[in-house]
Length: 292
Ligand code: GUN
Image 1 (cartoon, rainbow, N blue to C red):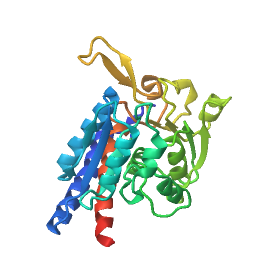
Image 2: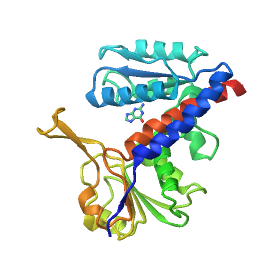
Image 3: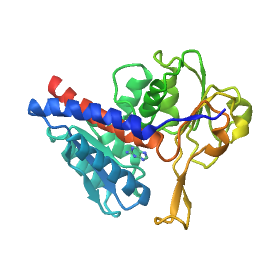
Image 4: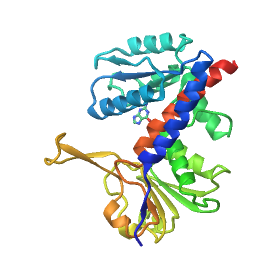
């Protein structure tokens, strides 16, 4: 079998076009959705992600109130900026790009963001609401994965989904979303303490690989016909590229495409969905601000 490659770029574009249409409607009512992306320092991956997010904002017709701060910004200064953005009614969403420099406490920063403006869905109030099934901003990468699964038309109910990774950004929330009634999967969460990974992956109908390590999942670990979603973004040196590196995922694409029914490429799979769902959440934050 040769897997169908899921075109995350195209699906993300559809989501972004839908958002742009609704942004135009809101603008006609006098409200322009506005996001502040806050970047501290010059981590190359973060700079690249933030550039992509700001470009998407412009394309959606939204306002960009982003701030780029130097690496030596103090925790106090960052918290003061968040306070200012929290209290500015023209700002609907706030995203602080992670990771932050080591001298800044990430938890303190995330908790400072007004949950109503937390378009990343990282604030404990949004995480808690997600866990108990109440309305919450869904974290962008996990939400994007769910949209991809819906888009390929897969019947997910009763299927075995296996998630590799337990991060707050991907592993934990995607496990919760996959087990919600609308997806209805039986979910196994694996992590560095898992002893029999291959035995488990071979039982999975859906594999979400978010281990943070290249080629954690190889062809021999995948059941025929499984759906494989690769969340990995590992930079490996490549002298043939202008940038000096290329991106590879957490799965071995070449091997797995001979086994899986559907597979996401890296780049061009999950990555573009993260940005699309961020635009979706920012629109939602702006819409919610009217309903108040
Ligand atoms: N760093 C890696 N992924 C993300 C994300 O989705 N949001 C933020 N804020 N930082 C990240």
